[in-house]
Length: 116
Image (cartoon, rainbow, N blue to C red):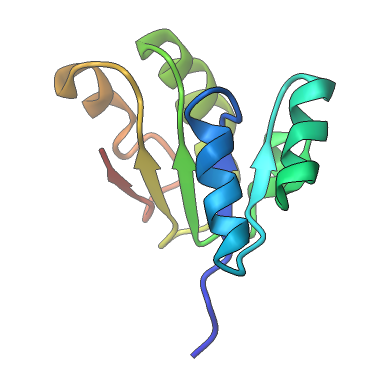
């Protein structure tokens, strides 16, 4: 059985250590980061940095570490879900209430699962 392709959004204080742990475990998460210095840190930690959310299109599982409901709307619903294939799973580590994150469930083309 092949390992699922891992995507990651958010390489800040919480996300970067998660990327590093995955890399130490032998995985190379495709990691979206907005800032060039964050992408450099991702590469140094063993992840594969990307500057465009569309580069996560082939991921089977995308871990999202964002700050608030506004970022959930902007990043997950508007920019990420349209690129993910049916059957992809989004795992949310967002600092919001469950009611605020319910809106992104089913926000894509369909068939994606949201956990968070």
